[in-house]
Image (cartoon, rainbow, N blue to C red; front, side, top):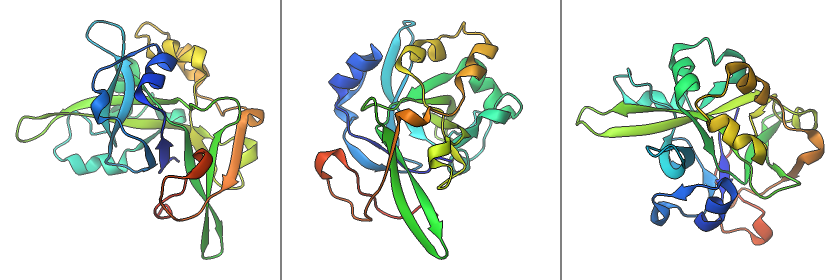
Length: 223
């Protein structure tokens, strides 16, 4: 599961990393406590068939849904069943995206205590999550684009905290994930736990302020 993450990389650096065009850089600001329902940057293939960095809402709202609130229940999509569930299978085939992040939070439970930890890459500042998206039309006719983060089994080094983790893509695999022509078996092979030797884990505080040395704080433990 992924219920909170961070993104503090500047838009121009995201543009270089993903070799994408930033369509609305003015709305992209650092966020050390991203929660479901927020509008956040994603990388997707645009109308000109090139990668574009735009902003979608976290929590996928299927195009057939009657209410937007369903998105809070669909912030994650399990890799093991993504081809089977109707809400996820069609976006997986046609509407894949990448969610830029710098790391994510998980909580270690000890009795009644929840101890927050921050997981990031040890080999790179940017952690691209594999995702899917959909377009939903609200009752007032507004197009709402929303996304889910795909999850897989946790790497051994963090399994004692949580059994799930986001699917983290290597930089070289981002284009493969976004390419509409990529075969399903290739996509399925990308949805695996990230290597332990490239993961860094440390405990963080409950306070939210801009952290020093890019070491995030957070607002509230995950429910």
